[in-house]
Image (cartoon, rainbow, N blue to C red; front, side, top):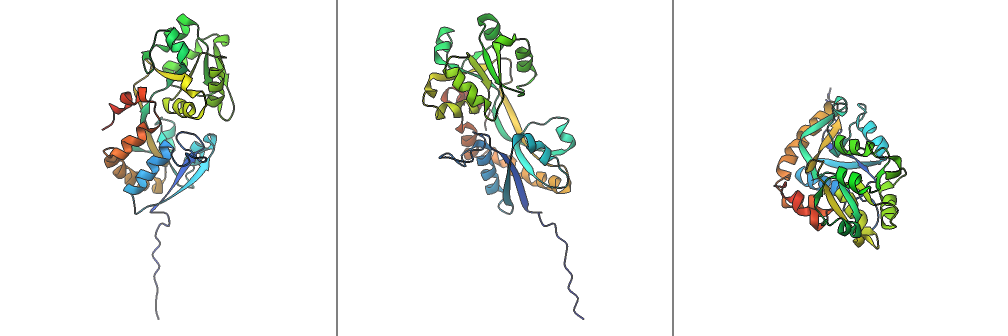
Amino acid sequence: MLVIILWALPINAKSINWIRLDFAPYYILEGQRQGQGRDELVIQLLHDMMPEHTFSNSTLPASRAIHELSNANKTNCMISLYKTTNRARYIQFSEQYSTIGLSPSIALRKDIIQALNLAPGQRVSLLKLLKEHKLTVGVSLNRSFGKKIDSILATLPTEQLILRPGKDPLKSLTYMLLKKRLDLIIGYPSEHYHLQTLLENGNELAQLVISETDDITRGYVGCTKNAAGLALITEINKALAPLHDEPKYNEVMLKWLPNELKAQLNSHLR
């Protein structure tokens, strides 16, 4: 009698499903710049470093991404995540960072920069700008920018702080900025720059560096905290370490920054 033994191998041992967001310039899902988002380009570079793995992706709203990533009945991964104690209960994080970028910055019109006797890319105190010059600041509703910036914003009177809800609040705030309905916006440099390049009069805008923040922020890969996710993180860590030394990686990290801020990040790249 012929006996055939079928070994039970994990079906997804060499596959990674990446969660991605409709969130430019980290993921650009349509238009002429499709596929040129920072995070999706990093995933492409990782694929080059991990040719034995099959990559797939699922596009989710930002509100569902962490919940889906934490679901132990599935195995997903996501790049450019902040490590927090609460997230670490459900997500296995890489030791190596996947992305490195600048901390939140100020976007404002160039006429305001000139009036304040400042220069694009200059480091300034957000507290001093808001308190001494009584400028009106716009931020996305329910978005955190870290304890220091959040605490500064929390002290402002309601007439000085504009909170914008909606699907694309930063874009809406940028239109308000150009129409002189507010004075400055808080966001991340890449986001400001991406919007600036899309708008017809975006050349009227520039950015300032906030002195109350760290120079840079690092994002890590997170995979579902189960046996399969732990195995994937081990492999991803091996790929990330040499990736940081690749010139293409540096190009991707600098891709969505204005010229006046590239030197600031470039000093932290290998």
